[in-house]
Image 1 (cartoon, rainbow, N blue to C red):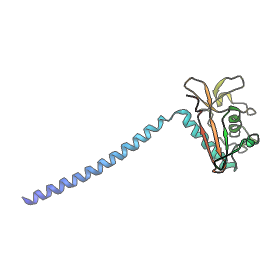
Image 2 (image 1 turned 60 degrees about the vertical axis):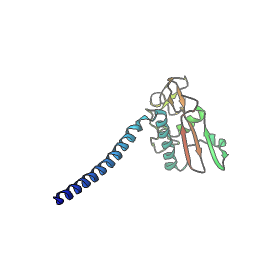
Image 3 (image 1 turned 90 degrees about the horizontal axis):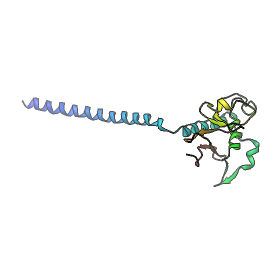
Image 4 (image 1 turned 180 degrees about the horizontal axis):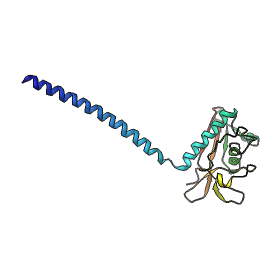
Length: 177
């Protein structure tokens, strides 16, 4: 009988090991699932800001320079030993993002689509608001790029270029909800 008792111990240890491995795998799988399912909770303005940032970076990669119009180069300042350009008003925002529009053959001669105009909002000269696709149809006009706030008004993104570190940051307006 001592042989059977030894086998029971081995079986119990073996089953315990399998249970431990399965528990570890379950924790990893549920943790990953929670992370994936939680990623949809990013607010739309933040998600669009990330997309705009990638558009700026891709433009820099494709054309070898940031999409900064000549009219804004005099606004570059020195901060913490780096050359920085901060865009905070809607006219400058429009000048930057006009360079990324596929219809702008002067600044974007390769017709590369850097902006998803279906998720971005703008206003026209008559202060009518809508998506960039529906309102921003005239390629000769620079439309500011923004997002719809909880109050159903359009707020505009702020853009910061660090020319020495070669980075760009796009953020929703901190003064808007």
